[in-house]
Length: 573
Image (cartoon, rainbow, N blue to C red):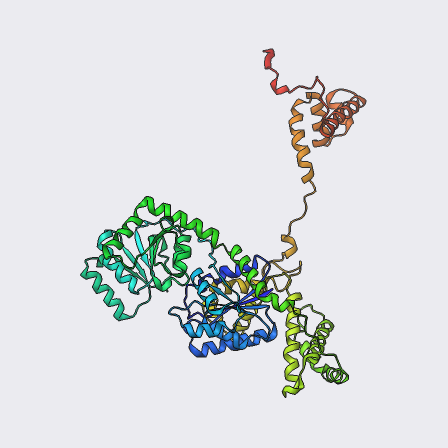
């Protein structure tokens, strides 16, 4: 199944953070996933370019399902997705535009809400005409951070909840308050002034969310207001770091916070002192550790990417089932007129195939794939629409060629989403843009994904010959660096067994073995050195080897006359 996930970066930024984990969860169940996002803050022009890229991508390769996150992404999917492709939407904006969201949801095949409360609300709005379920956010494991004093109360908003926290600060001295938010100058000055009026200005720490410094290691707990309750992402982020939360009793917070176990709900009727007492209670070391561990375990079990991916695929199948149960539409027959159309445009197919004759791919195979696309286009072409056949056939042929390269061109099989991203990165680098961060902003992905895509394009697209040089200044080739099977590996066990037996061989027989196999002396030379006959040396050598062979192969007992001479007392003692 090919799933295309769309999201608009100017919608609530907390949800796109989990898109990578969501894609990982789907891929863990063998789904192919593509993700597309608008550049942050790009405006209508950037959205327009994004939509144009989507339309071109869908013409080249038709997805099995489109999952749109955010109202803008949902509208784009509704207007530009190929006919018959089911669209599943998740709406995350705050504040909400209820009328616009309802109109958009009515044109989709299913709705995945971010909370149980919103799921029930959608079911009452849409009835049975559109399937509705919940979509828990997928959480990636949080790497262990450097140890830091966990003393601060964290707030990720400058909305009304921040004013209430400021008023409560005298009740939980001396812990600092970290505010991670982007605020206008007037609002920032207002908050700073109020903090100084309350005498807590020295405890207020302001952090820019665009900064590179991770402030979570300093936090002991989180206070979350209604502005993030639609998805509950800040509370889940805190739980992933073993931190409890005080949250407003709304929407997703009702699903992720268990009062008295993982945190506490903020009563809107609380006075500043009551809120301060609640924060002070949560900051108690024993309570904080107990609630934080419970929150982490709950988030880990309920928001694991693999589990989320399994639930999503089950819902996707649910919305696709009615379509799959219908009998497939009959393909138009290849009439004589359509056959003549194919024959007339065979040169166009060969011309398009010649553009892709690169690497080790057989040109005849590519021509055959192009001609198959030409036949497919002739079957589907509707002349009543007033479109030139050439304009219709070219995208179909190009799509068949791209599909062929997707399935056969890569030397190492990589996920389809990574293939597409690698090609997009390579295309942008061809324009002269090489900075990872700039390419990531252009494609709406993370810089780490750009690095991974570039590496896939360099190492997985084509294979190297064993005669490929290891470096420009070295005569060594790749084959020289490859290991080979050690033929003596099977003898290791026998050698170790022999090592324990050798000390027990009588001294004369041991000398004969050493001179014969390590000194490489002949039997006659050994006999001369020992003062015995060559026949006697041969007899002793044969008997010793026979005893050793039977002992190692069949575990036969050694003769009683063989002793470990190192254990014999010296000087007759």
